[in-house]
Image: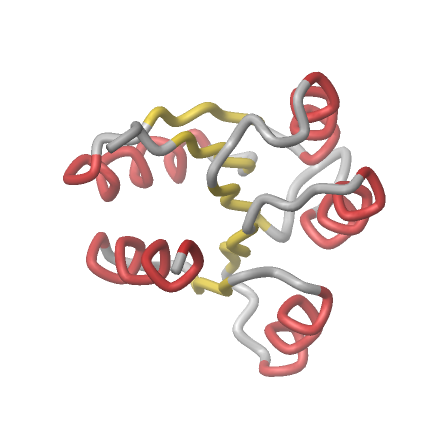
Length: 122
């Protein structure tokens, strides 16, 4: 089985580190971007370089919803999992209706992350 390639887009180094820890059982290759613009720059080189993208909502430079919209306009087909502390049902519905594969609220646990990955990737 090929190694899963994941892009984690979050302004928090702690979240990148915690995600890596949570994902250790499946040992994916994880790349990082610290804001939406950095992620768009990285993905513009190869839009389909990743199997899954984790996307934070609240970031400097370019937030998650704006980043997601721009990536969709670029033609992104990779499943995107929104990760956010925003827990209001309207926020969750907004992103699910926009087309994110999954929505995961912070704080989360390793078992939740792994289950959401299974759901997002089928």
